[in-house]
Image (tube, rainbow, N blue to C red; front, side, top):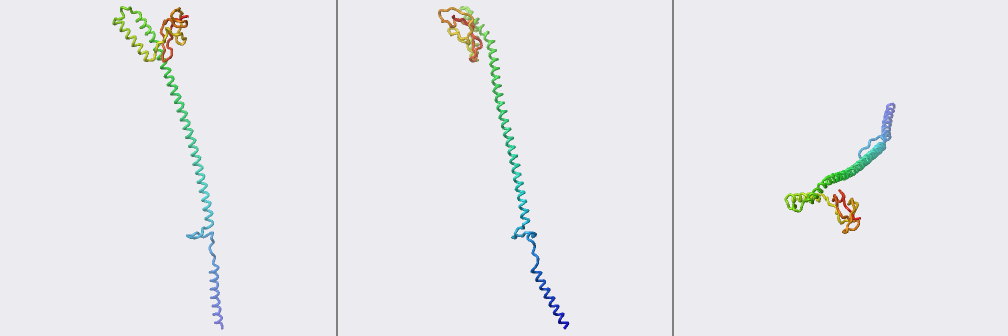
Length: 219
């Protein structure tokens, strides 16, 4: 009888152990979805999604900040370029004005120097004309007289090349801008206000009076 009881107890223990094992297998704790690493083909873990989203936001903000800095740097560079271009344009304009002013001053100095030389040559021309006018008729064909005439013509020719021209006087109406009236003379040939005599020839240089003509005018 005792043996039978022991066998029944053993059988009961085996069944209880099997049922407990089955219950444990059925009630086995499944891993938390938030703590399991994702495998190929599995759903992403919520925690990692949040971390990736934060990292993407940080990367986007960093990229936006970098673009903003690049835009500011480009704007500053463009502003500097415009400033330099404006400075170069002003300097070029100033240099052009300086060049024009220098050319004008140089031309004025040349004109002043040329007028000074011409004024000094004109008395020599006057002396040539007086000397030729005083040559007697019997000596006008001599080599000396002809040589003086040739030198005089050469001198007048050079003055003409320099645009030095004599001022018309006798028979012309008196012009205070061209003539200097030093006396009055009566004349049956000319009307009042007309030049009857030329006492000293006047000249112009490039349209400007170098020396006024000294004349006698009919009153």
